[in-house]
Image (tube, rainbow, N blue to C red):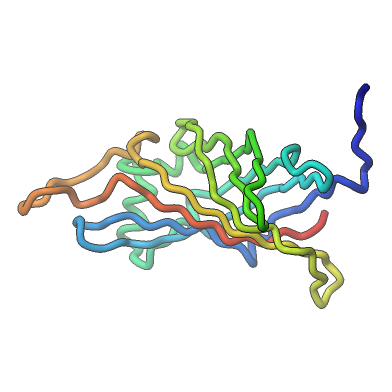
Length: 184
């Protein structure tokens, strides 16, 4: 017997870039983390209220919006040594699986494309929150998500050897997303 999903049980949410952030951190000189973020975010969450495993998310990040607090480093990250932003202007994520873990936690697996290379990734997600009305009548939800990737898996290979041993830039990149969505 086929099942149908009523329109009321599916909600489409649009990412609110003004109240969302995509941050990353990576080891620098093997002694501390350097953090940065992207401000150019867009995306859609399709939430299935009856069966969350049918939910999906797609997100885009404008690589040219990277900032680390150092314009010279930001320019280097946009160059062919790293993101090659002119050739690969967007980071794209498309979910392939949503799994509830209980107490408002999920794992969201999908494909992320960085620098023209697509690899599977899994995010640990807290949320979404209960819907809330903002002062302008919009309905909003929020969530946080984290993952770790190896930058070399995406062809971001530039590095420099340190005189004391080791390398200037770590391979592991920790990604944290804090996002709000507005009901479409």
